[in-house]
Length: 380
Image 1 (cartoon, rainbow, N blue to C red):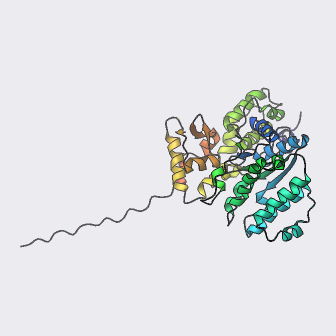
Image 2: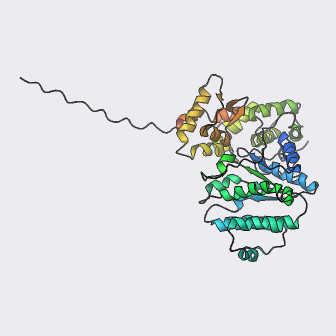
Image 3: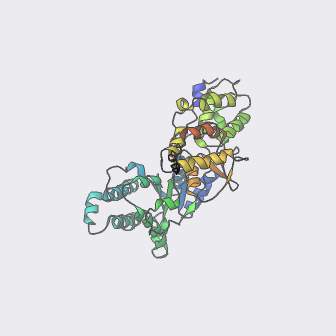
């Protein structure tokens, strides 16, 4: 029989799964994204962290390349947000494109020769005059970690306007019909454009990235074969994780390493929930908490909304379009379910409980001192 650590090695919690990872779970989003891109339909995959966006991108790029589609991924975090100028930012995007597609351009020289043009126009010229001229097959460009632009000290609304422009040019220049963009990140379309006068970013298809479903999750059985009833174990794991990819992979690894007589509930309690800060490696629960706690201006309304949900009789609140609900969804703590907002899984509910809320709720402002009116003087 294989050693437990070898069994656990088939699972990976965090990071993009390698192309040959045996426990990659194909979800409905995999097929929807792939078919949409084969139709040259712009897409965006916006969700909370550690939901498998990067792994989805890697797998989709592989499938597209097998269909003779040229692909590139631009990870905006690789450009940085500290001490970067607008020109450096746009030039960096151009450099990644040149390298990824192997374009015959000495970029530094080419960039200087375009000097009368704005940075955005230079990028547009690179796309039109070089990229589309050199590559005659369909092209898909994945823009990953798009939410990183929210930390820049300047706006890049024009960059997203350029993506819209490329889409709208399809009716004028047929070559643009070969170019498709995919945006991935922890954001919503409305968050990307910061200028009030900017046209809303309203193109593309939203790809819903749900948690693992039991029928899809059969590859996860590969490391559970030393247990007598691996399918029942997998159902229990998914019940605790809610299908959240990171937690599901981590729980599968814990079960694979554990003796067969230890229950999933015991492992969850001992290895994840109890003293969770010391068990949170790689970071997952702390990432969720930090997203909520590290915004002092929004902290109180976020926690009070979450408190209302936990105290509600059915553990849910009706969905609305409030910024607080949107932020809690993007944190990964909550999810949408049949028109309601609910906690994503029992593990989150146990860690981020009412006591956690009370610990972090800002104290109420001190009451103003009471002033006592002077007693009226008595006249004799």
